[in-house]
Length: 467
Image (cartoon, rainbow, N blue to C red):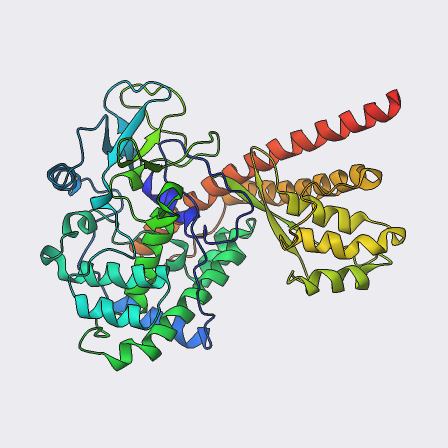
């Protein structure tokens, strides 16, 4: 996919997902196991430290986000390493973006890419510094922090690393939400639930780094010098990982970076994904449709989070809130993903709980368990007597979110960038455009959901009339 938009949205794909299917159009996978991140004990201290380092730190590896300077070297290295001749190639697809485009006609259902397992970067990969890898594994560091540290270690070796050509092609500034300031998040993402997730994710990753520094880095400074392994480089590596990792079901759920395939475009309009193909012994992508030379996939995001909350005026508010909190759900609001293809069962369960009358109090516990994804029984949970009210509640919430996006998009044209230098102006213009693209994409998904919900209500009500 195009670099900027992918890293912008996919940084947050570590959020819990309720669907085992993920959607790609010449695309990468959008899910992986739990991050096992640590919440920062002193987020403000770490954020201040990041600002200080950011002013004085320029990463000596990577390239500009829209650069093609290392594309030829990357392709040559991949070919020498076992990647077969390709029908796609790296090219600029929009301002500030790179992506894979078709070089030849590609038929629908055709398998492409064929990346061999030897080119995957995972927690099993050999370290150029074996002692450093051994220390981390001895401390039982989880896969994501382990991979983040591995990427920094290999990047610092530059030409001495086997992965130097790949790392040189990675964006030096991935424009991941991990690199946005709090004021930028507040300014540009006020309409999207991604803002809150970004704040949480920054705190989580900061906490994870602090934990590694305290337990490991500080005790082995010769292996992990602070000039190399710091919060700036850690945010960079996590920004790369969270926007490019692939979850390979056919390889026992291995989580890996897949060089070359991670340039593919991300879309919510199709239901296919990267996976390991046993017959060809390679990671492949099966095309969802035909592609003509020069064509690239549509740049749409796969889901938008819809916030739901109990009504304080509800006579059973306290009882319902207690049931939700018992199963680990928020006391204020809960967010669920809405996709082009529909919404998860957990969202419907929350809606049932919200609209259920006092006479159904015995079912509150069951509904809350299902809403939290903890229930292992009755996956077909339905309450016909309140289904219409539940669907109407989801529709109302959906339309409320749509109005927030509309207000932001209307105001974005006259938004003050609050700049003091040319560099800030360039960054501000770029981030603003990313935010507009994201909100436009999320609003489209909500409009589609709105249409489906209205149609469902119409069918339910016409059925009542016929009855």
